[in-house]
Image 1 (cartoon, one colour):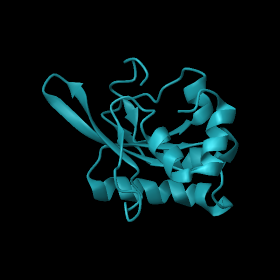
Image 2: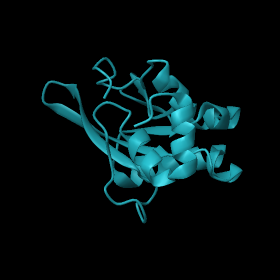
Image 3: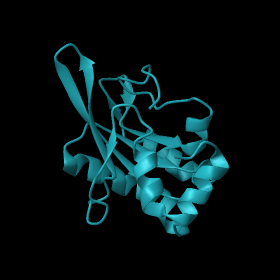
Image 4: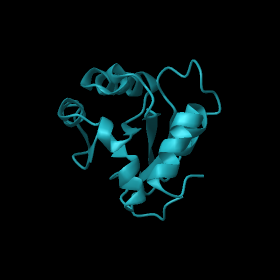
Length: 146
């Protein structure tokens, strides 16, 4: 498991599937898919409590640093939002390295909407956020890191 940002970059370059499994599990309450090919754009899943007795589904998509530039453009965030909808999940977390995040990606995530006026439907979460101790703003975001 990567202990530093540089370790994470090395893992992404060496074994993108291991990186994907690791990064998909960085969000509390989410687990990486066991199947990594043919996953329809969903790399991790979880069910999180919204309030007592009420849960929502959350999905994750991960992009390693060695993907081509088209993989981390605004349309990819939009495609992930559509995959989230098709999976029936209320929220989605798009995880990648910070240097891959564009203004268009942030705009696409912001324009995806809000759930219960409390959470953005698509959140961009960076590996740098993780190492800085920041978590996506989700129902379990105040729980300890994995």
